[in-house]
Image (cartoon, rainbow, N blue to C red; front, side):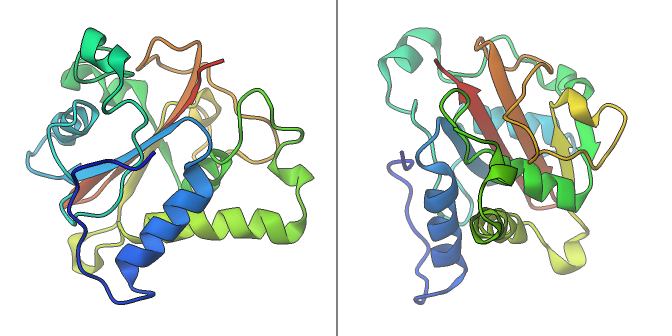
Length: 208
Protein backbone atom coordinates (compact mmCIF):
# COMPACT_ATOMS: atom_id res chain seq x y z
CA UNK A 1 0.00 0.00 0.00
CA UNK A 2 1.49 3.32 -0.99
CA UNK A 3 1.74 6.16 1.48
CA UNK A 4 -1.03 8.68 0.79
CA UNK A 5 -0.73 12.45 0.81
CA UNK A 6 2.92 12.37 -0.16
CA UNK A 7 3.84 14.74 -3.02
CA UNK A 8 5.95 13.16 -5.71
CA UNK A 9 9.11 14.83 -6.89
CA UNK A 10 8.87 15.57 -10.63
CA UNK A 11 11.02 13.06 -12.40
CA UNK A 12 11.77 12.21 -15.99
CA UNK A 13 10.74 8.72 -17.12
CA UNK A 14 13.38 6.32 -15.91
CA UNK A 15 14.77 8.83 -13.42
CA UNK A 16 15.66 8.06 -9.81
CA UNK A 17 12.18 8.61 -8.34
CA UNK A 18 10.61 6.38 -10.98
CA UNK A 19 13.29 3.72 -10.45
CA UNK A 20 12.70 3.82 -6.67
CA UNK A 21 8.94 3.52 -7.08
CA UNK A 22 9.16 0.64 -9.54
CA UNK A 23 11.59 -1.29 -7.34
CA UNK A 24 9.58 -0.65 -4.17
CA UNK A 25 6.32 -1.84 -5.71
CA UNK A 26 7.82 -4.92 -7.36
CA UNK A 27 9.77 -5.98 -4.31
CA UNK A 28 7.64 -4.97 -1.34
CA UNK A 29 4.06 -4.11 -2.22
CA UNK A 30 2.58 -7.63 -1.88
CA UNK A 31 3.92 -8.80 1.52
CA UNK A 32 3.22 -6.97 4.77
CA UNK A 33 6.11 -4.51 4.77
CA UNK A 34 6.68 -0.99 6.07
CA UNK A 35 9.09 1.10 4.01
CA UNK A 36 9.61 4.78 4.71
CA UNK A 37 12.36 7.40 4.60
CA UNK A 38 12.69 10.53 6.69
CA UNK A 39 15.15 13.40 6.92
CA UNK A 40 18.18 13.30 9.17
CA UNK A 41 17.59 16.29 11.41
CA UNK A 42 19.28 15.43 14.72
CA UNK A 43 22.75 14.32 15.84
CA UNK A 44 21.12 11.21 17.31
CA UNK A 45 19.81 9.33 14.27
CA UNK A 46 17.62 7.13 16.48
CA UNK A 47 15.41 10.17 17.11
CA UNK A 48 14.92 10.50 13.37
CA UNK A 49 14.13 6.79 13.04
CA UNK A 50 11.50 7.12 15.75
CA UNK A 51 9.99 10.09 13.91
CA UNK A 52 9.65 7.89 10.81
CA UNK A 53 7.93 5.16 12.83
CA UNK A 54 5.47 7.70 14.20
CA UNK A 55 4.80 9.20 10.73
CA UNK A 56 6.00 12.58 11.94
CA UNK A 57 8.21 13.17 8.91
CA UNK A 58 7.42 12.81 5.23
CA UNK A 59 9.93 11.52 2.71
CA UNK A 60 12.23 14.51 2.10
CA UNK A 61 12.26 13.78 -1.63
CA UNK A 62 8.53 13.13 -1.86
CA UNK A 63 9.10 9.59 -3.10
CA UNK A 64 6.69 6.72 -2.59
CA UNK A 65 6.51 4.82 0.71
CA UNK A 66 4.77 1.60 1.72
CA UNK A 67 2.60 1.77 4.81
CA UNK A 68 -0.39 -0.56 5.12
CA UNK A 69 -1.34 0.82 8.54
CA UNK A 70 -1.19 4.55 7.95
CA UNK A 71 -4.98 4.92 7.85
CA UNK A 72 -5.93 1.67 9.58
CA UNK A 73 -8.34 1.30 12.45
CA UNK A 74 -5.69 -0.39 14.59
CA UNK A 75 -3.40 2.62 14.27
CA UNK A 76 -6.25 4.92 15.28
CA UNK A 77 -6.73 2.83 18.41
CA UNK A 78 -3.11 1.95 19.26
CA UNK A 79 -1.42 5.23 18.44
CA UNK A 80 0.52 6.89 15.61
CA UNK A 81 3.43 4.45 15.64
CA UNK A 82 1.36 1.28 15.02
CA UNK A 83 2.39 -1.44 14.16
CA UNK A 84 5.50 -0.33 16.04
CA UNK A 85 5.21 -0.31 19.81
CA UNK A 86 4.11 2.93 21.40
CA UNK A 87 6.69 2.57 24.18
CA UNK A 88 9.74 2.51 21.91
CA UNK A 89 12.37 4.97 23.09
CA UNK A 90 15.00 6.42 20.79
CA UNK A 91 17.74 5.89 23.37
CA UNK A 92 17.07 2.16 23.40
CA UNK A 93 16.95 1.55 19.63
CA UNK A 94 20.68 1.35 18.76
CA UNK A 95 21.25 -1.41 21.31
CA UNK A 96 18.68 -3.58 19.49
CA UNK A 97 20.51 -3.35 16.15
CA UNK A 98 23.53 -5.07 14.60
CA UNK A 99 25.68 -3.62 11.79
CA UNK A 100 25.61 -5.05 8.29
CA UNK A 101 27.86 -4.83 5.27
CA UNK A 102 26.29 -3.44 2.09
CA UNK A 103 25.90 -6.79 0.33
CA UNK A 104 24.17 -8.34 3.33
CA UNK A 105 21.86 -5.33 3.66
CA UNK A 106 20.96 -5.78 0.00
CA UNK A 107 20.14 -9.45 0.48
CA UNK A 108 18.17 -8.73 3.66
CA UNK A 109 16.04 -6.18 1.83
CA UNK A 110 15.61 -8.60 -1.08
CA UNK A 111 14.41 -11.25 1.35
CA UNK A 112 11.49 -9.01 2.36
CA UNK A 113 9.78 -9.91 -0.90
CA UNK A 114 8.95 -13.30 0.67
CA UNK A 115 5.78 -14.16 2.55
CA UNK A 116 6.51 -15.37 6.07
CA UNK A 117 4.06 -18.30 5.95
CA UNK A 118 3.18 -19.09 2.37
CA UNK A 119 6.44 -18.86 0.44
CA UNK A 120 6.88 -22.28 -1.15
CA UNK A 121 10.68 -22.05 -1.11
CA UNK A 122 13.29 -19.61 0.13
CA UNK A 123 14.76 -17.28 -2.46
CA UNK A 124 17.53 -19.71 -3.35
CA UNK A 125 14.68 -21.92 -4.60
CA UNK A 126 13.92 -19.40 -7.34
CA UNK A 127 15.55 -19.34 -10.73
CA UNK A 128 18.82 -17.47 -11.05
CA UNK A 129 17.07 -14.78 -13.11
CA UNK A 130 14.30 -14.32 -10.52
CA UNK A 131 16.82 -14.14 -7.70
CA UNK A 132 18.88 -11.55 -9.52
CA UNK A 133 15.73 -9.51 -10.23
CA UNK A 134 14.84 -9.16 -6.56
CA UNK A 135 18.45 -8.41 -5.68
CA UNK A 136 18.56 -5.67 -8.31
CA UNK A 137 15.38 -4.10 -6.95
CA UNK A 138 16.95 -4.09 -3.47
CA UNK A 139 20.11 -2.50 -4.89
CA UNK A 140 17.99 0.17 -6.56
CA UNK A 141 16.32 1.05 -3.27
CA UNK A 142 19.62 1.25 -1.41
CA UNK A 143 21.31 3.36 -4.11
CA UNK A 144 19.20 6.30 -2.98
CA UNK A 145 21.29 6.42 0.21
CA UNK A 146 24.63 6.69 -1.59
CA UNK A 147 25.38 10.29 -0.72
CA UNK A 148 28.61 10.95 -2.54
CA UNK A 149 30.55 13.35 -0.35
CA UNK A 150 28.12 12.89 2.55
CA UNK A 151 29.81 9.66 3.60
CA UNK A 152 28.85 6.02 3.26
CA UNK A 153 25.50 4.75 4.55
CA UNK A 154 25.38 2.63 7.70
CA UNK A 155 23.17 -0.45 7.67
CA UNK A 156 21.60 -1.99 10.77
CA UNK A 157 19.31 -4.95 11.40
CA UNK A 158 17.42 -6.56 14.26
CA UNK A 159 18.28 -10.01 12.93
CA UNK A 160 20.10 -12.20 15.46
CA UNK A 161 21.94 -13.69 12.48
CA UNK A 162 24.05 -10.52 12.51
CA UNK A 163 25.14 -10.84 16.13
CA UNK A 164 28.43 -12.47 15.15
CA UNK A 165 28.71 -11.56 11.48
CA UNK A 166 28.11 -8.42 9.44
CA UNK A 167 27.48 -10.52 6.33
CA UNK A 168 25.04 -13.35 7.11
CA UNK A 169 23.28 -15.18 4.27
CA UNK A 170 19.71 -13.86 4.39
CA UNK A 171 18.52 -15.55 1.21
CA UNK A 172 19.12 -19.23 1.86
CA UNK A 173 16.33 -19.73 4.40
CA UNK A 174 12.84 -18.46 4.97
CA UNK A 175 12.39 -15.19 6.81
CA UNK A 176 13.45 -15.53 10.43
CA UNK A 177 12.83 -13.03 13.22
CA UNK A 178 13.78 -13.59 16.82
CA UNK A 179 15.59 -10.34 17.42
CA UNK A 180 14.54 -7.27 19.35
CA UNK A 181 10.81 -6.60 19.38
CA UNK A 182 9.89 -3.28 17.82
CA UNK A 183 6.29 -4.47 17.35
CA UNK A 184 3.92 -6.86 19.10
CA UNK A 185 4.02 -9.38 16.24
CA UNK A 186 5.62 -12.72 17.02
CA UNK A 187 7.82 -12.50 13.93
CA UNK A 188 9.35 -9.37 12.48
CA UNK A 189 12.59 -8.38 10.81
CA UNK A 190 13.98 -4.92 10.20
CA UNK A 191 16.58 -2.96 8.26
CA UNK A 192 17.59 0.60 9.13
CA UNK A 193 19.74 2.72 6.82
CA UNK A 194 21.41 5.85 8.15
CA UNK A 195 23.15 8.60 6.19
CA UNK A 196 24.11 12.19 6.95
CA UNK A 197 20.92 13.36 5.21
CA UNK A 198 18.30 10.62 5.59
CA UNK A 199 17.17 7.58 7.56
CA UNK A 200 15.38 4.67 5.92
CA UNK A 201 13.28 2.09 7.75
CA UNK A 202 12.28 -1.21 6.10
CA UNK A 203 10.32 -3.71 8.21
CA UNK A 204 8.73 -7.07 7.42
CA UNK A 205 5.96 -8.49 9.61
CA UNK A 206 4.31 -11.89 9.93
CA UNK A 207 0.70 -10.98 10.62
CA UNK A 208 -0.60 -14.54 10.25
